[in-house]
Length: 315
Image 1 (cartoon, rainbow, N blue to C red):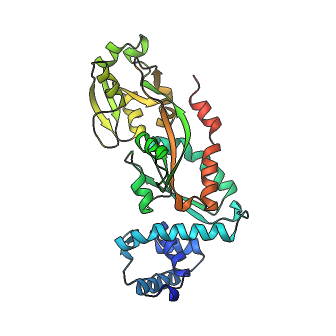
Image 2 (spheres, rainbow, N blue to C red):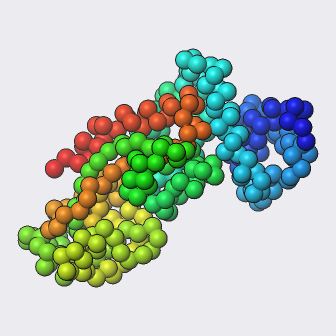
């Protein structure tokens, strides 16, 4: 294949199909017919000598070649968009699809406001949520699986602060604190929460990996103490339901208690030991840094939930 003979319009189609993982949805996004999209992908396959996309019962699955190609294509298209239309981005006329990764409680906290804004300001913008099951989302960003990750990534944020060569960018959205959460009529809700009665209780830990060891266990170990983790779950919503209906206690970021949907059944108490602050960070790849649509999304996430955070963290 010669790059000089490659129809670059095919790359726009490829980007849309990779984003949607479905030919019909990609066609709608591009204002093309589904046969036209299929034909474009066929021509790109022939040019590159790779199948690129394999049909499945649920859409299409990219080949390793397609996955390695997509980040470069997205970065190039974003750069061209920024160069061709500088300062003229109109979100009300934009057509874009964002793939975002968040934990369930974070999504419940941020998405309602974002969806209201998209419905009123950006009717052509779509969001595809991807499960976040790790504190290390950089591989997902590097592969182009997602456009944005929002969550608590302490190790990643620390590394990025000192690594100027990384293609991953980040910004802090919020800093808060951890608290101990239990059902309203829990025996510990009626007395002072001391270190002794804290470690004597049965505990639930929110752990994406299922590993029964968290920040609280590290802090307790420094004090020569340990607790019994009876249950680990990988969703904050599940944690809220279980704690509200048992004698287990858990540790949650204070601003995410409301996201469990069990606020009326739960109470929180200050922890009898010190934990580091919990930070909510936004991560993205530099290939999207100059994309007007991506910039709109990031700016919106920065500013849209000030009142929601204030309400969620009010004593």
